[in-house]
Amino acid sequence: MHFDHAGMATNDAEQCAELYGDLFGLEVAHEEEFDDMYIVFLDCGSGGYFELIEPLTDDGTIASYVEANGSGIHHLALATDDIEAALETARDHDVRLIDEEPRPGAWGHTVAFLHPADTGGFLMELVEH
Image 1 (tube, rainbow, N blue to C red):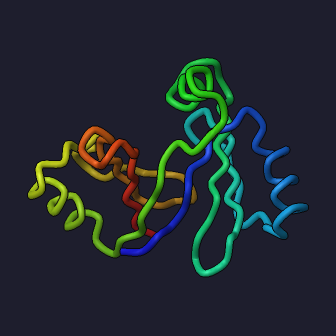
Image 2: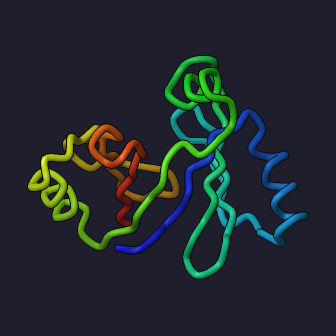
């Protein structure tokens, strides 16, 4: 596994993308609307990304997160070549799964989330490209 991205919840993904472009020279690698969210991936080099996630509705996970916490890091993602095996390893270590089975994610990837109560307080995403 290796680091894939940091998912960052915000009310204005476009503004953040512009700011990070100006400050850090990051370029948009991909953008899309997915599950009532506007998502922008910024290329940080070495295969890592910032995923800017903006809610497009007043309900949903990201909208609730931003309302409760303001903008910030929502999750960290690790890429794996075998998401099923990674989920089995999590089960073997008694880590609760938010997604018992992998599901479609942004950018056409397959994803599954691990419960933060069992990962040191951090919401972790497994990503298979």
